[in-house]
Image (cartoon, rainbow, N blue to C red; front, side):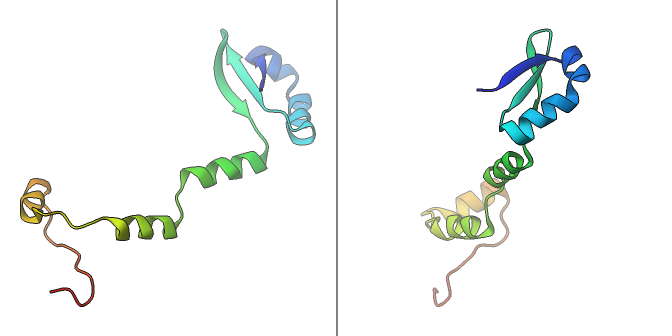
Length: 92
């Protein structure tokens, strides 16, 4: 669970809050009028969050490869303005 602190208090205690995050492994939520404003997290936590947001190239390729061909491709092509289609090697 994250430690919550008002923004006015966080300004005065920023160095201490940074130490709590880096060395204590805590997550700090800075609030304004009782509502969450920002969060202080360690650089390692930020890297993990970034990795969750951006799918790897392999995941994208495997997702695209797994898409099965639609039965009414031409209607879908017209609907979405698609000018080309992918065909597997050796497919006619």
